[in-house]
Amino acid sequence: MLVIDSLQKRYPNSDVALKGVSLELRAGEVVGLIGPSGAGKSTLIRCVNRLVTPTAGRIALDGVDLAHVSGRGLRRARRQIGMIFQEYALVERLTVMENLLSGRLGYTGFWKSWARRFDGNDIARAFELLDRVGLAGMENKRADALSGGQRQRVGIARALMQQPRLLLVDEPTASLDPKTSRQVMRLIMELCAERGLAAIVNIHDVVLATQYLPRIVGLKSGEIVYDGPASGMDAVVLTRIYGDEDWSAITRNMQTNAAQDGALEDEVVESPLQQERASGTAALLALDSGHLSAGNTKPLMAAQVVTP
Ligand SMILES: Nc1ncnc2c1ncn2[C@@H]1O[C@H](COP(=O)(O)OP(=O)(O)OP(=O)(O)O)[C@@H](O)[C@H]1O
Ligand SMILES: [Mg+2]
Image (cartoon, rainbow, N blue to C red; front, side):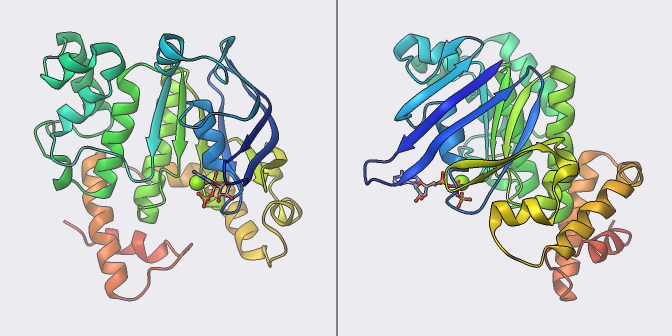
């Protein structure tokens, strides 16, 4: 459904961010995009929804060339695409419901949405999505009163309001604690599976990426240097993407997660909201006792037991 062919992007100040990237996604396929800072991950995602105009190449979404479409054609194509961002991009002073309904801007028309007159079907869909992402009853809360995990759930629900076929996700967990990050990744994967959505998920955490994303694309200096199954991510591939490093701790973590996957899923018994509260408190407790460090999630799990 998405075919990216020989995509190039050179920014006006002469930075070449993408040097001929080719990538195909089938309907419902979810891909993790990894690579060092500056590799071009965000540029690739922004080219697909045309926040950035490519210098050369083709991006076909269900046959429509996004690299060259403009005006009404571009607006129509963008309705097929939902965006989820690291910093959530919510309107802080608006309520959760208002933020969700703003996800329908492409359909509602600017003045109608400005006057906040929304279609009854949109409101019904917003309630259904809030329920699905674990935020039932929070529709009147202001965005600036929410935790990071709750904000990202609003961001996810808003991206789904226009019923897209493709999700573009730029570092969805970079501002979240380890447990909330896993919940958010799991939620995104479940929603993609339920709704048959394809997705490109740009993510820095390699262990998290390989745990949840079946296919990984590794970008380095604007070129794809790996495109294959998550299980193929070994020290050789990591070195190809990121350069020389002792990768043994990372690859050990990936193997442990792969082995424990079923057990980890079973651990979730609370409602998403309870989990969120627990993880927030757990993160504080872990921070208090000086245990919070990358990849060290054990104290978080232990601390969770004593939360209300
Ligand atoms: N608006 C811009 N103008 C000029 N150069 C840019 C612009 N945006 C990105 N670049 C350059 O393009 C290259 C790729 O940047 P990009 O933001 O796509 O990388 P990234 O892989 O998303 O990095 P990060 O992991 O740090 O988010 C970098 O060299 C960056 O400096
Ligand atoms: Mg980026």
